[in-house]
Length: 483
View 1 (tube, rainbow, N blue to C red):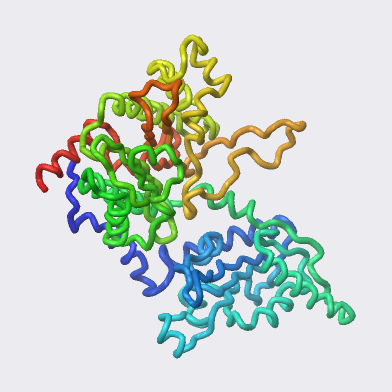
View 2 (tube, rainbow, N blue to C red):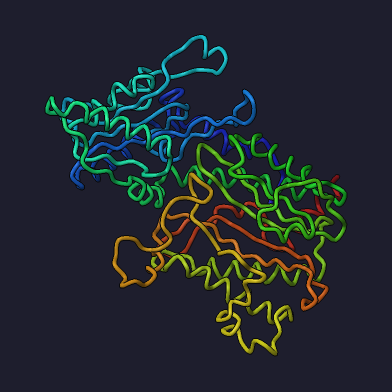
């Protein structure tokens, strides 16, 4: 495989820049995409009897003193609007008459002085035109306009109890409507959680989402390749992380999708270990769990490789077990099976490997079924094999079926459908212990790829970075020879 980082590889980021050519400065994918999503929500609310949906974006968060954390919009809000500015709220009125606006944005007003410091603001008029809303108002008008918009509506739909601050705002708006009851105005009589509806919409990705996720995966794979090519014994974990972050930005991603894990040696046995200042030594494995976010969508990749460019025999044994477990999970991933099927397939392979290596005592466990029944594998594999992936790295959507009664029993696992996206990430984490063969001490290995479920299987979108141990060694040794 050609693993050279070239300017042509910047295509993922370049594609993001050209996606909005028909609406300069407008939403990624075009306003029609988000308008269609809002119409789906409105249709669902009408089918439930109507009402008004309220979807705020995320607040800005202070980092320290007068410096904010880098701003990131709320995923639900962005999914329905494509709008990335802070201080914004979407209103969807399912009871609006034909001559009334059903899709309304509240956003920051134009302010030339603030734009000098912070950059362009669309303002209500610009946002309405660019993003396809029926109407738009300044965010400062919320308390005046929302009571008017929710008056005489049967229900409110929003993320119940997700934010104390927003809950208090909603109560204030309802109280403002109730204050007008002598004038014949009625307040919404019910409130419903909007998130289950939005979660089900977001769980199955559309063509635009899948294209964006493929591009995020490609950039993330390039970053992992660069980390493998540049890694040498003597480097510190944060130096390796710097290569990842550089590559994300070079090829057009806006940010990491989550805090990068770069773990050398025994640190790889800590599941959420952040990149620190530990030195990668000769003979260490390096576990990297890192990926970028592109236009609001996350990738999620883990690779484990030897700092020196060659696995030891013990490392290779464990690596091949984890890789075989991942392949078993991949083979089990397709539309029509339940979410747990890939995990069950991976666990069987891992359990057999733990027996074959003597990490688990064969005198105590006669078979793989015994290992699974007693969950003895969980000492070395304590997480699940995958999670939903999308706008959030741990994306929305229930893992079990919703809405059916099960006589007090745990609901069944959700059935996979084409267009769902998930990670496939088995691992083994073997800490030093008296009852574990010493040759396996402090070996931590995880292999993770992103999969789009299809009718006949799954599409792995992160295999732009090698996963086979021989290919990893070849890639690293070629880079070392060329250095």
